[in-house]
Length: 126
Image 1 (spheres, rainbow, N blue to C red):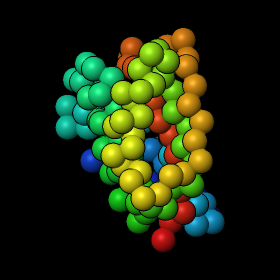
Image 2: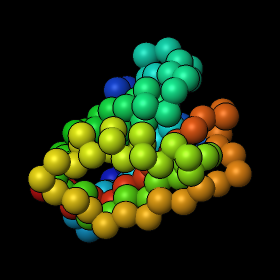
Image 3: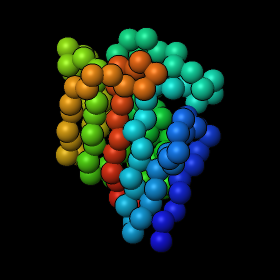
Image 4: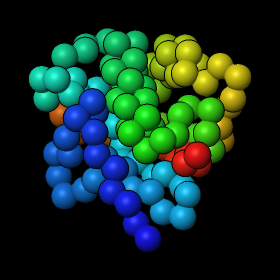
């Protein structure tokens, strides 16, 4: 059975998709970008600040589903500029201290709303 995950502590979907879906004990999130869920706007400008907002948005979705960063098994990270890789990794690493999930990180031509980073993840729901 599919369970749709929704929280007001993460940005509302800006298209025909859900923030996340739980299926058979697994959480699959949509990509999160640096939208502030309180305002609905991208406010962060630097890769560091955008990455932090993205990870906080994912944290809210994880929490709503009953999961956490320790239960993440795979992430996919999209950067609009691979020159931001080191700074992105610094922020990303603050959320995965003891547990390092499998990960892909790719550069893309552009991302929604002109942001610098988008991250999606798969996690186990406890």
